Image 1 (tube, rainbow, N blue to C red):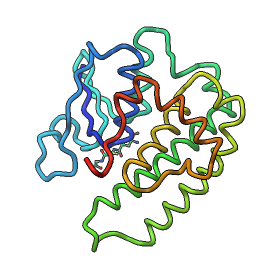
Image 2 (tube, helix red, strand yellow):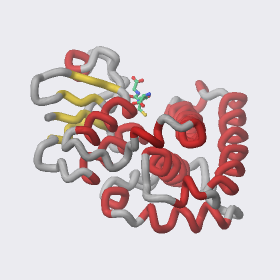
Image 3 (tube, rainbow, N blue to C red):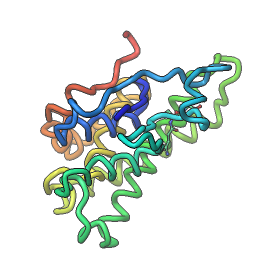
Image 4 (tube, rainbow, N blue to C red):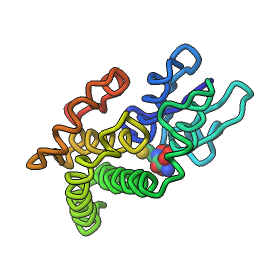
Length: 204
Ligand SMILES: N[C@@H](CCC(=O)N[C@@H](CS)C(=O)NCC(=O)O)C(=O)O
């Protein structure tokens, strides 16, 4: 299989974590895609131009981290990051949705910061900074509850990826002055699959 990514995409990182976490490194070739580039050859592979995109063994392409992660996790019939019973429970689903929304807002901020300075919207940037701060406060209390203390699932990965990309790309350390969130992130951030896929910081 082939997995198209960019190094800075948090969504692509989720799928790379799944590849490693599920021992699929031998089966999945990771390729860098050229996104946001006029005439990029990648558009022939994935017309939407977004990453991540997985081309499976049968040549079928699929995009979206949620779909790809579930697919990769299902291949051995023993999903580790998805739990059919729990995933159908609202208490877990709302948490995963909030973690995804947290990640999405941070991705919007990063995307805006990639634009030339004169094209950036200060209103949009301030809106996303405020959203990220409010949601970090939510997770400061959520991480102390049982669901986020259990074995890592997609909600955990989304939250960890969001926090780490915010720090690496300049939005800031959202665990600062949030001791429960900092303590929660520490053991997850050292999981081999997370360490191997850590986002490049702005100095790189
Ligand atoms: N909902 C999608 C979002 C994917 C996404 O927005 N990817 C961004 C990178 S973080 C991208 O490929 N942008 C390039 C473009 O919009 O052309 C997912 O979960 O995979």
